[in-house]
Length: 236
Image (cartoon, rainbow, N blue to C red):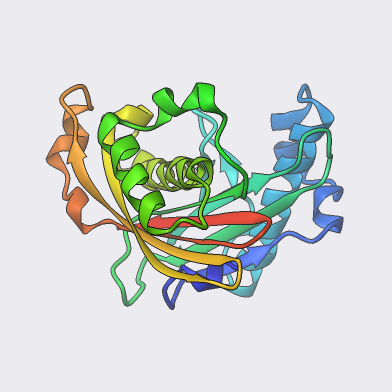
């Protein structure tokens, strides 16, 4: 479903059930030797899906892990991995998105995120959404009465995850959920599905200086929501 939100020239693949269980190279397995079974399965799914997609593009197939647990992509490749699973499940859903450095859209970084299409826990709202975003979503919910407010909060959470995955390779540091505010626009609300776009409208005072200095207004942010999943993507 990421094809509904990603532009041309970005390649996407969902991990098969086999990929969640398929053993990786010794070097990659070493990254998860002490991890719990759920984390091992997530890591294998992402790396196996990435390897298959990279092989189709005639690129090196190993995606290593950096000091801050970020994926290290082969030369000439920009990519993102996301996975999500219901609680107590070993296997969930995992997707990989890749674009080549010499892409026609001049994309420098991208991020994707998967979340279950359910309301964000109330105790997390103030940690994820700025006051502007909370007020803005109440206006949207009044206009789109068939959308639960908590689901809109989860959409903000997912979009911010995609944004931060996009920003990390450019900034080489993590940013807080409250460092920026985004504004949503409901593009389609049909047949139990939503197509939503967003834009960053403010970078707040406590945000890293490198984030304030970059051209964040050029970032593209969107998501597709069905009855089960939220698929969010961002690129710049």
